[in-house]
Length: 359
Ligand code: NAD
Ligand code: GLY
Image (cartoon, rainbow, N blue to C red; front, top):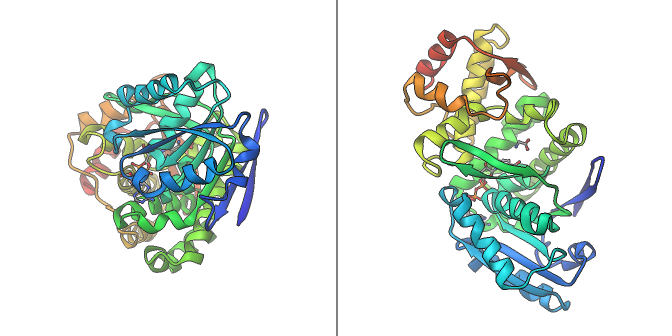
């Protein structure tokens, strides 16, 4: 098992990455203020893993409530969030009851937000079960639900007490979801580590074949990079915005097509191609570099072309981006491969050109 520590001004926590961790409740027990938890999962993940976690906890005297939510990005909303509160209240959960998020990024984001709100703040622990959640969403304390007008628009910064990434749980993940997770892994290489980017190019076939050592290295390197960025800028006043590479375009795709039509990772992948293309228009990237980005994304089994949408629709959706400041959209672009920067505003004509060429 590898353990990374994320140290923040008001808290610190460990990210454990390894095999066979689901039932290692010794990783959980020190974080429970009282021996009572509420496990939040969904109708896909619960049949696979809930009983094992529950039995391991009950064997150590921990009382377990559980709530199983409908599966999917389209359920990341108020109605589903309220099902968590219904279960907590009907199960007499106290403020010191710990919420356990057992699932992908949707479950992690909703459980974290529920924990932030329940009795004004209950502890929670992330047990990510998708590659995307293990490399990104479980770390850093961003929690949210979607609004029909904008992705992740209602939420809170609220840190977990621990993250437990059991690599074994990825065995049941569909290939399409594995690829979606690889989008966020590629993001780290592009935004801040050219060496890791080259490693990804050399190892993409192994990652897609679920080579255990390659996957564990990818999760570790991604979590190291995310933890370092979040430690520097927990509330996204600066460098953390770079983690949104591809997301301004990606969120616009997700919201426009209806949540769940494209997976989050797929939308981010197509968004990263647009970010690379915009960077080339500004003279920062060569055409060869853009092609390199496109080839890696293709090799990961991800889309490189965005869906065709009217320019007005792109602009209207991107106006809801959380990086908008004083009405200006701040894009994350690439100065070079391995170095992302924030670029406030892009000319509409440039946007139109790259959207036409890449959708
Ligand atoms: P997801 O949570 O919808 O999971 C993907 C699918 O895989 C679901 O159908 C799920 O039920 C299933 N699944 C999960 N684990 C499984 C397993 N082990 N075996 C079989 N099936 C399994 O999607 P995701 O890609 O994990 O997360 C995407 C979400 O994460 C988006 O809502 C995005 O906004 C959010 N996100 C948040 C952050 C953050 O910092 N908080 C960062 C990136 C993404
Ligand atoms: N996934 C973006 C962030 O955590 O800041």
